[in-house]
Length: 181
Image 1 (cartoon, helix red, strand yellow):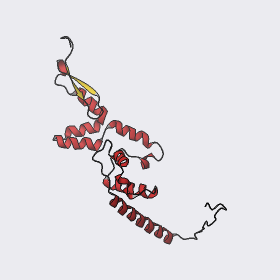
Image 2 (cartoon, one colour):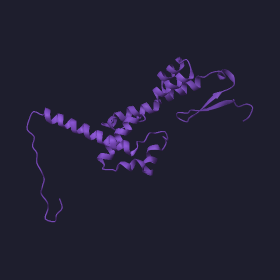
Image 3 (cartoon, rainbow, N blue to C red):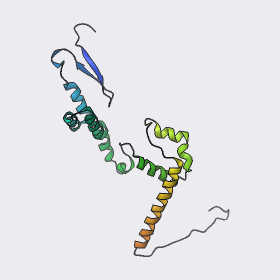
Image 4 (cartoon, rainbow, N blue to C red):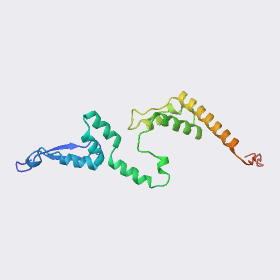
């Protein structure tokens, strides 16, 4: 760097990984405007305002967690325009309870064995980029599948009891001559 070039500090945003340059000489030496503008771009004005109103660093950190990245919310808003997207995907990490329910549904609907949660490939898929992510044990999955079965059975029984009409029940007992159903 030659003596005529301005001196600056570089900051790497932990959210978007962009490098922000802050001048160290001249009128912007004590200014945080560049960093605040980037924070508004990355997290949004409401998040920046809430962080600035926070009394300590821990509260500011919690505020940022609550707001999330602005670019992420833009992506979420764009994807929500696709029919059925909101029911299928989320940008929030799953809770322990939702992991248990989804795993139990997947195991039962796909006719997978309970011990599949111990499979190396399954565990890698679940933990990749999220090493702290909860994975239920096979015993927990077994218990959850049984609980789901009981709840669905109760729901169906209630629906059949409340149904005010006739139900047509048909059995398909036909077998082809080559003994394939």
